[in-house]
Image (cartoon, rainbow, N blue to C red; front, side, top):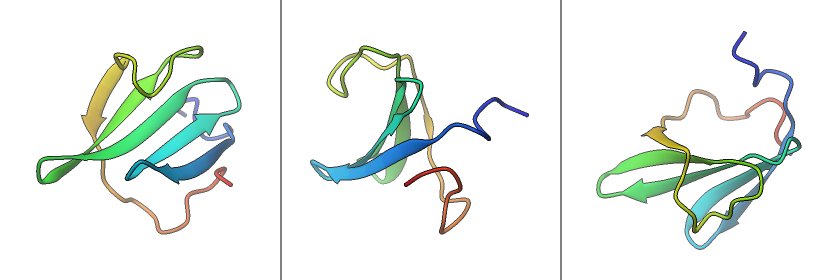
Length: 69
C-alpha cells in the first residue's frame, strides 16, 4: 500500500494541464513536456507555479481513477 489508495481529490483541467488537489493539501499536476507527460507533486501550501517536490513520468493506468471527483 503506497498511502494514496484512500486519498480523495478534485481534478480540474486548467491552463492545458490536469491539476489535482488532494484532501490532505498536496497537489499534483500532469502536463505535457516535449512529447511526454510528466506528473509534478507539490507540498501542501505550494502553488502549481512553485518548484515541485518531485517530477515523474506520467502514464494512464485506468480510464476512471478511483478516489478522484
